[in-house]
Length: 462
Image (cartoon, rainbow, N blue to C red):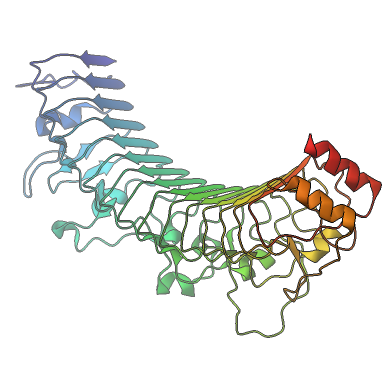
């Protein structure tokens, strides 16, 4: 192991003729706060690090280049890092390229983790030539690289390089934050094993992935959109127009468990068409949070709007336990294009809907029947000025009931805090603890049909 820390005058790790076996057993190299260091690996040292497994470089203010790969026509031996597993680069403000030169790293076959943070002059991470060698990469983190335009770039000398059908074929985690110049990620069919995707604060990013025409023709599971993805988080993406550009096959997102999105102001619809849900692709989804997306019109959108006859009610989103919708002024409905059976949302425990100004209804009326929402514990609704009723029928009509004198008196007493159970049949919600509704002026008809419901109301008033 080699640790070089706070060496203010260090300009290189080696100089002059180096014995053949000098670095052959080195497994870990860590460079920190070496402010005069310009290059990590000069060409004459590259072949010495055949056993290197971990490389960490942090806060080296003058470092401009990582690996110098030689020149065209040179007699330099091939560059190999056959054991390299982990690369970590942080706070390198002048780093312009990690791999410089037209030579190639022939063997990075064991590289599993790469993290790059606060390298603000770095415009790309890999060349097309490099990507071919990175089939074992499992975790990629890029943070605060404000000049990065693309993760993979085809340089002039790479124009004849043909990418394989699968790049990053073993990538499990992809986290990208504060890359304000980044405009695109990867084609979706090339991240078939991805389990976690988080993209945060990338102001120029317009799409997460694009399913191109060639990929649409191929029906292999590899071509589905994120078939292994379990967690998807999209935050602070003001230019985002689409999550997936192109046709989304049934079978995409089939293992997704958590979805969170906030402040994606240009996005009108998510990546969840009704046909996808009806074919069971989101059957494992447990958590949905969407906040501050001012153009969003539906969570699950109708991709068969021209079909007059809709399919019969089906079990939809059975594993979801928590729904959070806030600051969605154009959200009309949660689900469009799919009819929900009474077993939909059967594991739902918490609902929070706030500042959704044009939403008029939330759930279908059949969720009020026996077995509907059996695990619901907490329901909160606020600042939804056009909300007419929590529940609607399948024709989007509302079943309204006359309020008794006692109920009208309760409405007056509750004022800002209302406990709501509308509909003709009292639902069996044994887990219910709180229902809170605030500032919903159009929601004004309540119906209580048993002593149980009155007891619930009185206890909540306290």
